[in-house]
Length: 251
Length: 193
Image (cartoon, each protein chain N blue to C red):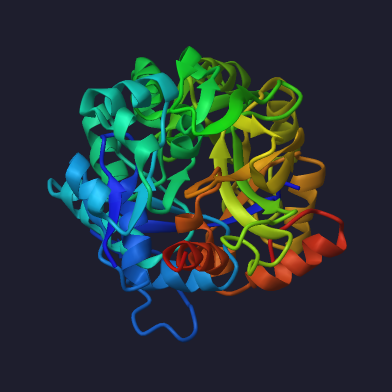
């Protein structure tokens, strides 16, 4: 049976992990490669690297990082952040990334989704969507949730599927950072409307939030950062808890 | 041990190269027929869309060479699918090594299948040391149905062939290079065939 995936997300700036990472037994908690290897050993199913650098050299720094990660870890990983062209994606995939995640660039140039799917296959195209509710309507936002667009979450999600996205990474800005659970209602609606996998993001705080998002939110995977980085939730313990709830997981 | 990864411009070969490097084997990337024929073991990778990958393979002339190879050959993901008779993806004629036609999952399930799923009914010395129900990483929309050459079964919508073998030709739908320690063991098994 296909298992539900647990995905730690590493924020990267200039080739280093940002946000304090409090991981025991790491020589260098700022080294994304070492952190990634640790997660791969301790039960993560997949990793996401989100680059938030704003320097001129960011493309090269990210490409180098991808190469170092691919050399070291034996589980799949996705790279996102500032990717805006076929050429960007080509370098990252050639260096060993399994998937790339595009966000603002897809909104600005939706045709990019079609181009990436045609050239590299849908399986490596993740479209990340950040949204929050405005007057009860789920509205797509850009720039880490700061800039609202005209797009409705559900309409945009259906469009990106039709254009060839292989997966959607949905972050609820209303839930992100609250540690009060994922946006399960919106997630369930996405799963009903779409026929591609949905990754839940934003709101993880307790183990039962993962159970909830897999059962009530119908999510295929759940992504979180700080609860894993600060060891508030141990991935193996989380998976045992999910298994107890009859949710299929890889242990 | 000379290991060659067929380099025909379709696929994430860096990950496969690195996976073997972690096992201490420096794989050579090649599209040269003589170099491929002279290898001890051959990896036939592939990701992306079937008809365009097949077109790239034909452009190298390697579509004629691969079915004649005598050493162990391992097709991974799309590589395995291209070793079959046909794929409905782009109505692609395959290499005809495995006697099965690749078809698409229905809309009953989410497509692509992305994630870790179990392999069962493991056969062939290539897989017998691997625990039943091991989880492997898969990303695919098309699959090989159950058939005589099946050496592993996975369930998604229905039971399908997640690994195939015919004589010296092996194919896996999953990505051993991305499937943790069990995946590494499968690569080791291939190296010791």
